[in-house]
Image 1 (tube, one colour):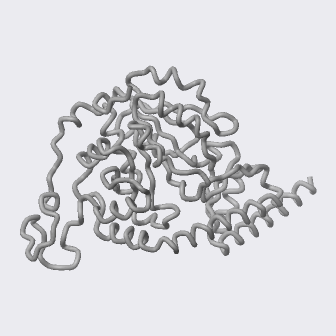
Image 2: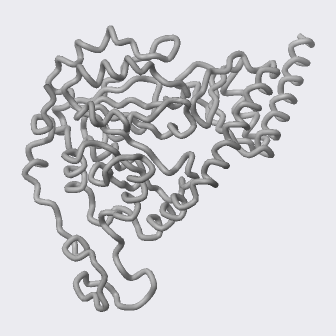
Image 3: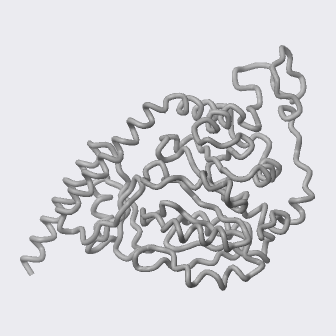
Length: 352
């Protein structure tokens, strides 16, 4: 039986949240003399500390109550706060599956929390047979699941995730940074069924706001209340809130751009199949493609020489490079470079 009180650190339970001037008064007034702000300028006022306008818009789009939404300084803040809320440094543990998003390990190390990394199987799926023994560890508080996974691009089986959610007595964070590109449904719809679930999303990928640094978490009101208690008072700037609101007010353009990216991905996958250097193309539910090549380090450096930057993932998946889907022009330049490098490689092989 899941108990939030047993999972939260005792000092966080007892924490009295900082009450900012904008928390104590959030209406409209003519004179503001409560927050020690400079009376001059256009950016002199503190932003809404609860990002109410964004939450109301997301509530309409995601079909979830505003009290179940947290807005963070990127999804990285969602990850970091999870460690700070639920894990005692030097004692508690977290678990994830590898290869996956490297920030889980960085945040764990910063917070002095041991991160258990379980290897995915050859199909990049979670082996549930290895899991239950870890569930018995009372010091294990968090499980991170990247869905679709980065850098592999695939989704894990729904029944596997449901098994984890139902069996694990701690917090399960499903990181849906790439969910907008996927054919799978978001786990936001499962919040009512799993009180230990946190769904993390971001405006950095499909929404095209990577420089704005805004992420969101969806969970029970009880969990979101704790997040709001622990976060800095003004964690998202007014400029960034405005950028998100402007984007959310143009859903039609969002869909157009997303479909262009997905169409470009389909074209790129077909073109990569004709490249001799490419040994395997992994199935992707994201806005990137993981490919296995003959020599990832060499190919990466050759592309850098041509001012084309991909992501060398050879350290995570042998001889693999991750390619983000770019514009039509950028993708054509990549394919042309790969074709030329394949010809050069063939000529060298034939001369030996």
